[in-house]
Image 1: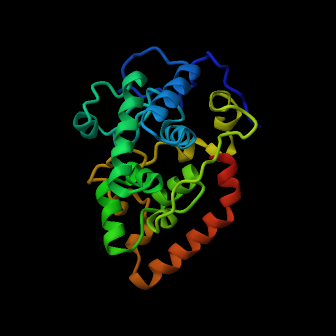
Image 2: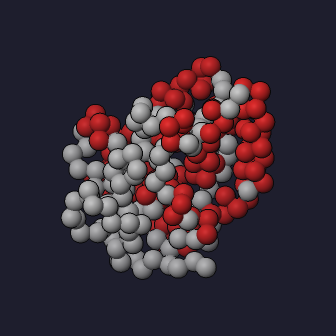
Image 3: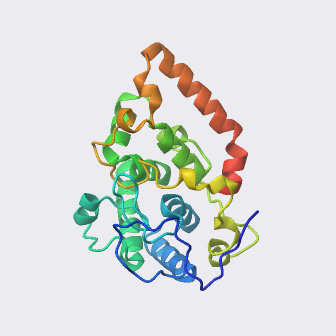
Length: 245
């Protein structure tokens, strides 16, 4: 069952982290305006960007991840400092900073799919994956699939993101603030703010320490089997992912 956001009501927080500052909640209307305006200004597909921000924080401007990523765009503190982002909890600052970061990642990796992968797992991890082969963290693979509707391997092969409107029956702004970005069984809180859901993940939060990339801890001859099983499961759920993302 989908429950629509009212256009001028604050985006409901997923949680109330004790470390976040006391700021008035921005309205969903304002968040969608910022997403659209900043995406268009930087040549980023706005539906893609809206899905990425929703995936990161569910539009919760006070979100804090288990590894310390902050705000609606889930910047790690050191990345925020590098990007000149003073207050990651301020959507008026964080959304433009996120767009600029994505733009730089796209310039570095060549397409928006790989930019999304790097936003989630870190540019170094994606560079290593492309250079040496192997696998991305499973959460990153799911992250890219949810946002783009295609697996990360497609983007490594040169595919570009296909335009996928949030809701083909609605204009962007109406879709952003209504049915296309609702809380639903597809967007359960268990998938929110995971250890890799932040730009430039902390090096300390490796797959072996947080359990996300469990295949990395298995003998090499089992890793491929586990990955293939996971890939099959994701492919089987692809239609649902495209409906929900």
